[in-house]
Every structure is written in C-alpha cells, then in structure tokens.
Length: 223
Image 1 (cartoon, rainbow, N blue to C red):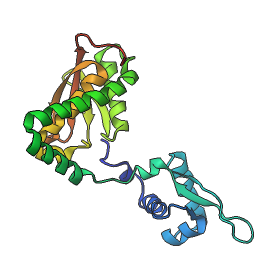
Image 2 (image 1 turned 90 degrees about the vertical axis):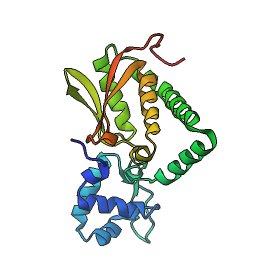
Image 3 (image 1 turned 135 degrees about the horizontal axis):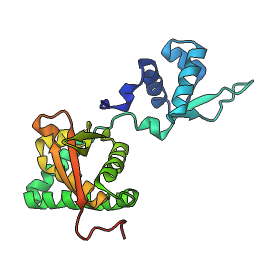
Image 4 (image 1 turned 60 degrees about the vertical axis):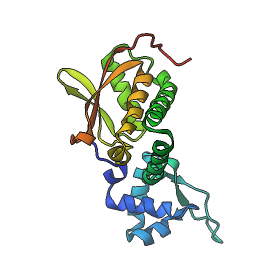
C-alpha cells in the first residue's frame, strides 16, 4: 500500500534536511546541514547522495570563503513538490461562489468540461493502449504523477485503478460534484467509459475506477 505522501516515505533525518533546504533558497553548505541536523559530515553526505539520486537536491553555486569555495546544496523542484500546498480553502471558496451565482447545473458542467479539457491534453500519453487492461496501467501511471498515489489492482477479474490520495478529498467531502472532474478527466484521457467501483467519500480506504471499451467515436490521440 502506498502512503499518502512521498515525503513521509523518507526517514526523519532526510525530511529534516529537505526542510532545512526549503528554508534556505540560496542553498546550504555541508557545515550548515551538520549544524541543523546534529550529525557528522559523512552522514550528511550520505543523505545528500541518496536525495540527489532521487532528484530532490543538487549542488548549487559554490560560496566564496576567502580560500577554497564551499559547496552548497539546493532544493530542486521535485523536492519542493514533496511539501504539501493547501489550496483547499481557496478552492472551496471558489466552488461555493460558483454554486451561489451559477447554480448546481453550472458547477457540474464546469467541472465536467474542465476535466475533459485536461484529459484531452493527457490523451496522447495513453493513446498506445490496445485494451482496457493496458489503458488501466497507463492511466494509473498518469494519475500517480498528478499526486493521486495510484496503482493497479485486481477486482472481480478486472484491472482497476486504485487511488489512495484523492487530491480533492477535502473539497469533495463538502461538494461531491467535484468527483465529476476526475471521471471526465479519465474518460477523455483514455477514450473509454469509466466506472467508479469504490469511493473514499463512501467509507472505502481508496477510490477505484474500472475502464471499459473505447467510447463510440473516440480517437487515438487528441486533434
């Protein structure tokens, strides 16, 4: 089972190291990190090597020190992305504004249209799928890159996408219509019918989706 956050898959020391770099946009030296973490130079280097291998940090521009320049390390975009950004409050306010000024049908239509538009952009990456099982694997990979912590599971003899981390979970609890975005995105991205077989809003530990055959008129790639 995947955890809800890739950050929490790291050890305490590596998380603290990343947080230290997050607070220092210009970078931190080995000595800075030793002082912040309370560990040896060798230990810091070992953690940096592991984090560099995963694409979270890299060496930055060395600092002149009157002698030999001191190497610094900086956080890469992938490292920044490990830290959650709470947009839920803003998103909820926007949804509630739209409900108040446009009504339920308008909000439902907007969410479906937005999901379909973004799904069309992703369709080219899923165009190679020749059957529902292959499409399911490609869709799981796509959703995983978007933060859904998705994987493929088997249920009743079918391959399904299982998502442990609904990126809209807090918002969807108050406004279940938000799920229309996910369904429209997956349908447009795969060109297939999508059946939701489990949902966290209904008490299940994860959301699950089963793909069907190609929808009538579906194309292999967006125009």
